[in-house]
Image 1: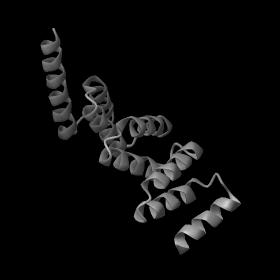
Image 2: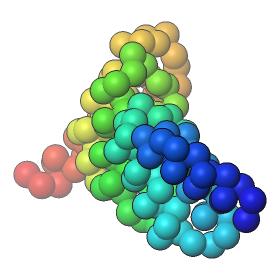
Image 3: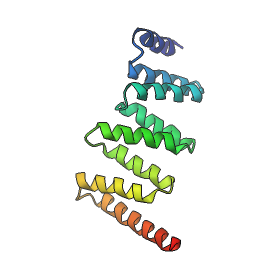
Image 4: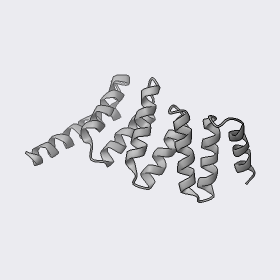
Length: 141
């Protein structure tokens, strides 16, 4: 309760304080109010789409609830604002796969390979995605 009141007080001073929105989201999530927690994360990301913690929380909660579209959008906006974030790119590729968007997942893995061409894990992932995409294309033909 004290943390919730402190975050609310911070937001009374500055409604654009994205970190306070994230803190309030975590408090509400821990209290079991997931709807309010998600709304707080949305507020944080409206204020600052580059808030990494908010993006990762949004993604984690979206995966847990099988609600991929919103967290995919948050990740894409976030990745447009930062030079490179390996964890966020991998997470975005994973979300694309969960949505059956293998071509987009493959593009995201190719972006990872541009930053780390020697990374064997990324190379293997790219090969697997390419093979899956080719198999699905053959089935559709």
